[in-house]
Every structure is written in structure tokens, then in C-alpha cells.
Amino acid sequence: MATRHLYQSLLQAGIEIYEYLPQILHAKLLIIDDTIYTGSANLDRRSIYINYELMLRISDRELANEARSFFTTDLSRSRKIEIDTWKKSRSFWGKLLERWSFLLLTRLDPFIARRQLRNLR
Image (tube, rainbow, N blue to C red; front, side):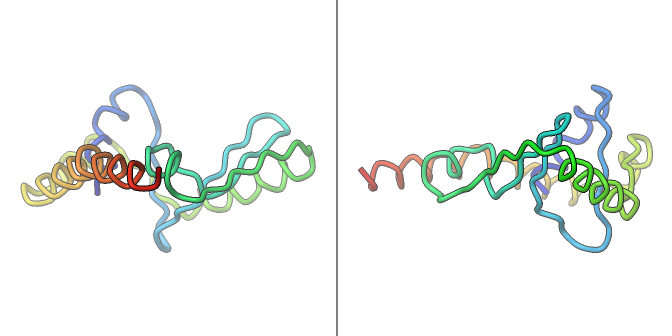
């Protein structure tokens, strides 16, 4: 929900967004040329400073091609978010939930993470 709060800005910037339909997909996979990065790490304070996260970097052409194949399959099971359709589909309550989710994730969670980090020291 928090991420959906950012959809309009991302779509207007020309970024394509796809939502995986069978279920929530929480995978992290980055493919650059013949190198893949995969793991559990998020780009947030909690993941960087508190959680035990792992990210692997593997340089292997065959594995990168296999990862591209997985990505293509997942993309075929996804729905592309179109800005006009997306804008019309959101209710007042949905927008409010997105905004509150974003606020909690970006303001409250970093505060809690800082406190937990201080307690670990």
C-alpha cells in the first residue's frame, strides 16, 4: 500500500510498473549484463543497520540468462499499471490507506529503527 502512494510520480516519470497477479512477490532480483544480484536486502534503515540481510552478486552468463527467463515468465503473469486506469480505480479510502501506509513506513519505522539501533550498541 505504501508503494502505491508513489505510483503516480513514478508513472509520470516514465517508469513502467507491473503487479504480479498470482500472489505478493517479494523477490529481489537485479540483472545487469551477465551479473545478477539476489537476496533479502531492502533499501531502508532497518535492513541496512538492524536486520540480518543477505545479497549475493553472481557473475555468470548462463545464470543471468536463466534469471532473465524467470523474469520474463513472472512478467507474463503480471498486470501493467496504466496511469489513467490506475487513477480512476482508486477510491477515497484507498488513497487514504496508501497515504497512511506511506507515512508509517517512511516516518514511524525509521524512528523505531533508530531506537532499536541505539539499544543494540
